[in-house]
Image (cartoon, rainbow, N blue to C red):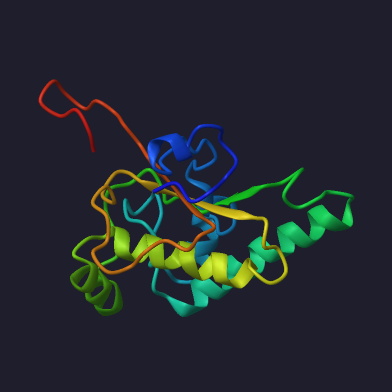
Length: 173
């Protein structure tokens, strides 16, 4: 479900709408080389997404996002106007972390998307007091197309469902 008010006509479709901002943005905050330098075997080189339940990585991601927003504001930017969304979309890789914590989340939610939505919610919650007008964008794409059974997106989380055609027998994710 699209949780924003920025696109005309979404209410007409029950709150569903197009979100254009999600585009593999996680890597803009924590690069693959940094992940490797920190001792993580994740990223394009390893063909696996970072762990989305790792407390250290999640805190680092959130601190980098807040730093970006603080810098934007300090340079005259207006949150909600000159910047409306932070993108934490996962890598363009269909393989995800299989640590004990991630497996627990996948089992609870019945889908890998449980971890990506929980991370997006964590970021949205971290921003809601200081930057309540900022949306958090992520994907339903390449391994995360099935919605989580339990976890619901925060009001400021936007999930882009990526339609694509792989072959003639596969129309959607």
